[in-house]
Length: 356
Image (cartoon, rainbow, N blue to C red; front, top):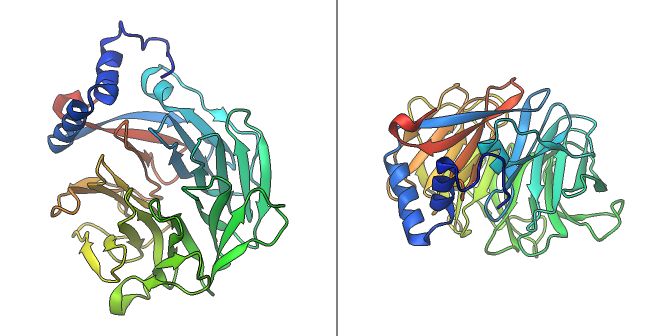
């Protein structure tokens, strides 16, 4: 871990923070679970840096040391999370590759040395994190809404687009070549994700066809259409859990839903009287050390917990423009300040009077 001014071992705050993150595994895991169970409030820290709406964020792999963010100002910013948390002021690194229009999606490769960004300018830019340089540009026929890097090959990534296609790209091939087309629908694909345990499988969220499961060996035909008799539901986000056994999906005008990998019927719907999701694009993700928390976005500008059966311990629903992110090591989630503000807020699990 990098040494940050004011965060040495003489700092009691830094010492306690490091002990709960990197101490004895059994003790720190139990400590985190007890903190979450007794959590009554959240503390926050604002991250100003963008000049417009922030539409996409992504934590780096293997602990969330870094965060990338992108939005309407067309820039990709790289944040050092330790500096953000502990330093008085932390400025992000601005990657040199700039989009021509709004950024909608981001992804790290497994080494955290490269970042992919896509958006309304119909292209995916591949960035070098260490140098900040642009490595390559992959042109699309329409806006790019979703990105996912293969968990077993950093040279392979999937993109979902407004033109109704899910494309599989190989960064070793010339960018002007024709990519592999996994899916081709008349309606837009808003989200795509590789299964972390079975990388031949991908999940998608389509604006009219709903949530689907695909096998890269059988292109253009979905293996499974989730939702049973109501499979044709407008979906905007889908995520696998870390084991690849469950999917969490966000649907328009319907509550968030949880599926087992090989069952088209939902095992749980996170219905709540105050929940409504109709306007703007939003996202969802799993959280917690065992994926026991689900995060989803809603139209109303509020955040509240709903405790569910043993499948998931809690669902947190947050505000409009709801792009969400979660770091499993730091136990932090990121939410936008509002739909049109130019910063981010770190909301970390906290108990009682420790909120600040």
